[in-house]
Image (tube, rainbow, N blue to C red; front, side, top):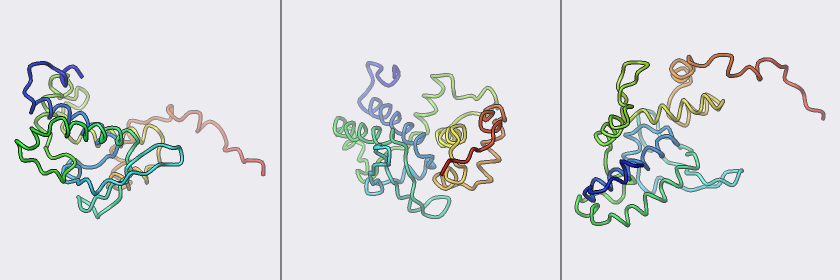
Amino acid sequence: RERMNESGLSRYVEFIRKSLNRFIIFQCGTGMRPTETERMKWEDLEEHINKYGERYYEITVPQGKTEPRLVQSKPACVVAIKELKKLYEEYADVIDDKNYNRDLVFPETFSKSNRELLKSCELYDDRLTGKTRNIKAYRHTYISWGVINGEDVYWIAKNSGNSVPVITNNYTPFLTTKEFADELSTYKRKRNR
């Protein structure tokens, strides 16, 4: 947040940093590929309310690496998009000056800005793998959170446009039986009917 609200920045840099923040929240809440999010139009977002009373988006992804699909977002995405709309009003001069396509939800690509953000937070280099992180890291965050929270791997795969083997081979090896000791150490009890 400090970096986002740093003083003395041009309006363009302020806009990019604040938009990147909403982009990251959106990516972590959908698992969409960055290229899919970058092509997303306002008409692709449809707001719904789940059975818990939380608002979420059903997002039409017309094309991507896989076939067209519908993506169900986490509730934080609705808040991020509402904040983004306010940003677009506040920074209308920047949007006009840069001649951004107003049909796109995110009219800017954030690869460079994201790299600078990760470097400033000392998160660019992954100390465990030795690899550098990029804009796809937030998609991986969505998938990892889903696996860690016990969401059905099939549904994670379907929502993110992946296959179950990709999820199980790449995102579950770090899990041990210790995380699921309570579930594994008991018999399923039948409910009284």
